Image (cartoon, rainbow, N blue to C red; front, side, top):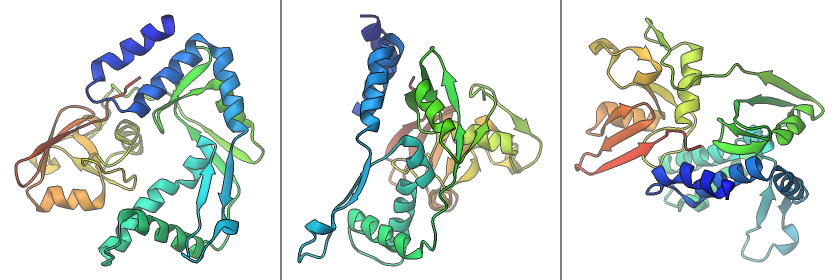
Amino acid sequence: MDGALFVDAKVAPFLHTCSWAQVDRTVDAARAAFDPADAERLRLQAGEHRHATVWLDAARTTGTVEVTATLDAADALDLDLEQALRDGAQTLADLGSDETSDVRRSQALGEMARGQAALDLGRGVTIYAHIDATDVALLDNIQTPVLVEQIRQWCQTAGTKVTIKPVIDLVANPTTDAYRPSDAIREHVVLRDRTCVFPDCRRRKVDLDHIVPFDAGGTTSADNLVMLCRRHHRAKTHSAWRYESPEPGVYHWTSPTGSSATVDRRRRT
């Protein structure tokens, strides 16, 4: 019952915008906090099912092959495959490809394989963890609850270089008098926004855009900076796309046709 009340309190304020994935993550956090033994059992069980398989034996005359994988979350972050596929698919589209997004993503994976001369098997782990209970933490990198035991395992993996970061208060508003943000301000904004804040964009390679322009008196501060990929930064600067931010992490966009969309990057848990 305590776990159910925890989930209700976390999800209820955002229920109208919650995805099933967000609900599942909250349930996982509740399980870790209120039934740590079962959470650890599930963690170990999930680790036994990791795999990466290229189904060459199933290749047919269609000329396609299935590739499936279930990865450790730290490995997935090191690989950054999702962002690479997004960028590769967009590059192909920009070059004139009229294939579907899924097809271009598969082509981008092939281009990555052909361009990979060697694999660097070392790992550098940088974890931004907020530990609210004895056995569970929230990873700011991917907004996912994870067991502390899992973090320990990542850090103890042979060949791992561990970077320990100080706790960053995402409610604070670090500021500089310069036009370019400091590394600390950039880190703050990236942890808050995570990806480009244009509706439905998930690119991680971004510019930091001043909400109120610097030459119009806008400050170079965390509250006045947002993540925009180069494409959507240009759209905001050179077209009729506009946005405003009533509070840090919330962005109201208006399209050239007058339609609107809201992007909400506030913490869910």
